[in-house]
Image 1 (tube, rainbow, N blue to C red):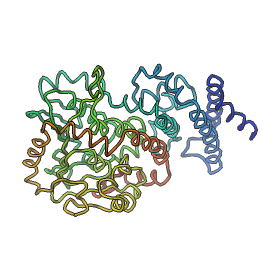
Image 2: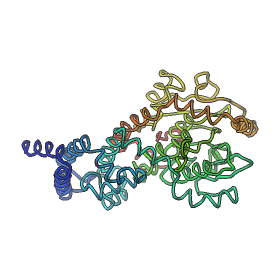
Image 3: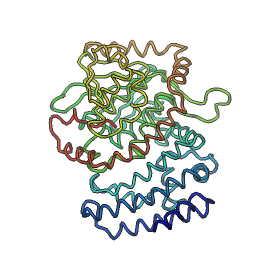
Length: 448
């Protein structure tokens, strides 16, 4: 057994054709073993040990295979980097062309129909894959570029938006007033807590705002809520939707990676377009965020890529990552630069709640106003950001503050770490506990 495993390890590091065949065979063997075991939630302790050993053995081979062949794999999937595949498309293509490297569509569909606590954890294999792809300077840079391109949904809706200045995407409403694109998050059922659906809607809205030539500045704000505790008041965001996470509806590719590499990165960098010639090949615009009520978890992470942030005097910020178990996106990469390493650790590791009026919030917020003064303050902000030199200077500030290659390396580590956290016992216990609606659930939202 040990000798066979060592032989497989040598072979997956060898010539590509033979290596992919060995990996496919090993993955099939592991799947056959798991198929005869009870479902994950019904296994005995001994059966869990057997399953974990089988999964670990083939994951060792996947990692070793990609350590050697990741660029060749990526080039084959993207036809020599001439195709721009988004993360979900890339994972789907890898499952077809390299059997056993990542779970296929059938297995993922079966897995996603289950509660988080009842899953096998197949997305960990996707985490291994994306950690290696993003860890490659060649493949990773190309994937980042692909994720900055506008989505097909946005391109389809662009004529409607440029013509009417308005589009209702479901969880996000987009309206152009003058030269400002106003994005309003309206998930009134969950205090703007994010799930796969909202990620799709907000990326579409960001694309439309960036692509519309009549738009000069983007503004993001939460809408008026119907929740009993916040009825009639605006709320920015309660973070990740714990109910969706408990129900198995938060995915690595369509939520956790798409969120960071998609709309958040586009707010920072812009959308990538072809045919720009010698000029910069991204369409960028400055952005203002207005925080009413609170920005928890993923909601707080958003603020770190905006050019100006305004907040109500009674607003607070929270990033309870360690308490809830999820890595808070790229906040670990960006927050320390904004508020300093000590406050960053206090928030992420200790759960510190930061009020907008505290001196320590100065790195997060540009201006604090009474709630009834925020509308006028927002208008002044977008007017300031229309300055002719703003675009060039924000681009150069972002180049200096966050080099693309540093972001790529962080996301390579994040891909695997977050996949592992999704299936850790402490996270599953917590989201199960928070899945039943209760008045305090908003404060317990997990940072995405």
